[in-house]
Image 1 (cartoon, chains in turn green, yellow):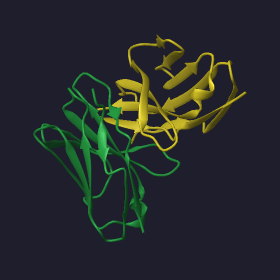
Image 2: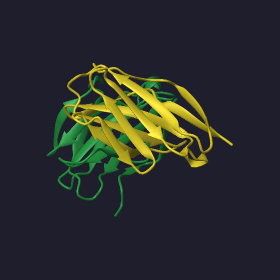
Image 3: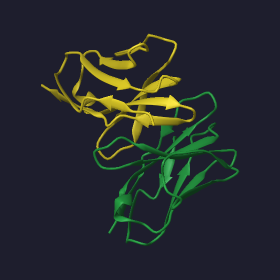
Image 4: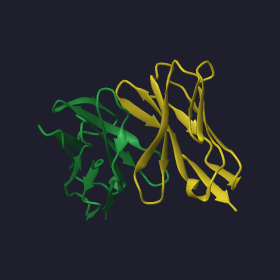
Length: 111
Length: 109
């Protein structure tokens, strides 16, 4: 049983560009949450998707948007990249009765 | 927002017990979690406790919850070199998890 998978593993972009990160949830999970982890800090909640809708959002600007597909996979889009967006982006999947299980993350570097 | 605080570093001798502490502010938290992160990796779920429990034991791991003081701890018995990592406390409120900054545990021989 594959766990949570994320792609790509690493990404380098320049300021002002746009990026799309992808996540496939663990088998049996229908909910996907996204977190940003800056270097030396704990993860910060961006948003959660359930039934293809954004169910809850953290304190992130509208430049951060997402999508969930009918197969429960999800994308995180970040527009107009800033240097401060450089971080590890973590996807977590869960079901209505389970804890959140995390993927390996996508490391984004903005130059 | 929710505040979750942890001490930043812990050094422990191999074979001893480790105790990692966490305090939080949100009294409506439902579940409380401990995650482990090794260098360059994602977060591994270690254990969790429901807010109406005060203790949970899972092999070498013991979680204690003092809901009155909003204090959570993780005890690792017989700490091994493979336990060296960053440990995060997380509290759930609604659907989101709020994390502490992490405790770096170093196991010395």
